[in-house]
Image (cartoon, rainbow, N blue to C red):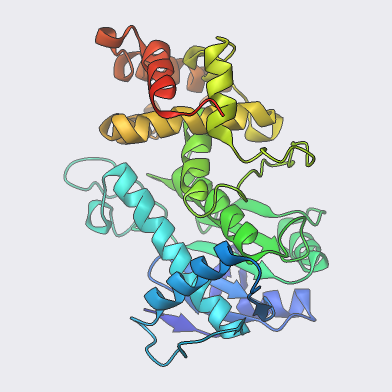
Length: 359
């Protein structure tokens, strides 16, 4: 399903050739899928025979990939650089479909360009869930490559993974290096990939005009990433966890303990949260648990919450943080009343006690 390969425009005044020139030392492959621009310089990856879980996961993905590329050998011991690109392209489109299903939308629900309504409704400024251009993904080998990209095209410094909006072209970028902490494992990178890409796609829904409340997009992103491998998706933005805790991945048990001791944030407290980078590890687990409850029991309400939160404010004004919180308070009260269950917090607590084990 690739629509272009090689040299093409990337974002806000730079293209793929500019990226290669600025970074240097990385052997890139650039492709476009239906919804993504992807640049990949990841090296080959040897599939561990001892890691049975990863081996089974990758074999399942390769089986799926053979529907598009039937010449892939039946037995693969090493993912070469092209095969890694194919897998990440397939993974990206899978995330896109998952988000579309979650938001209860399809490609035809969005306009072809700026200033258009779709079915008499505002659905953004372009065909990519409302964004004007495709979402961008940059997968590199060295941390220094992220640093050179940041310096050249974002006028910033740093070597950590990137989530960034290029406003002129309306491009949301996610970039990560194999040398970043924990990313030597393809499965761990896959988990972070799903987590960060989900956040970008949700932010771009109906066009990125303003930030929305943190708690539900964060929870949904973890929800999807944990579908890949719950033991390897314990990443927060700063990886705030105790690596000596062997059960750090077991968010169900950790959530259950908090519910049993009635030591958890109310949903109204969660609407007051700031950026995900300011949150504690326990906040991430609670955001995931709320999303798990809502997506499993009330998916229509999740779609409605995102649709209403992403509506532009009157006259296109840039809302304040307080205005975003006020909107979330109002929408959450309307959607998540659950009077027959004693309210959102009570219904959530009951779900956890019924579905999450104590140990």
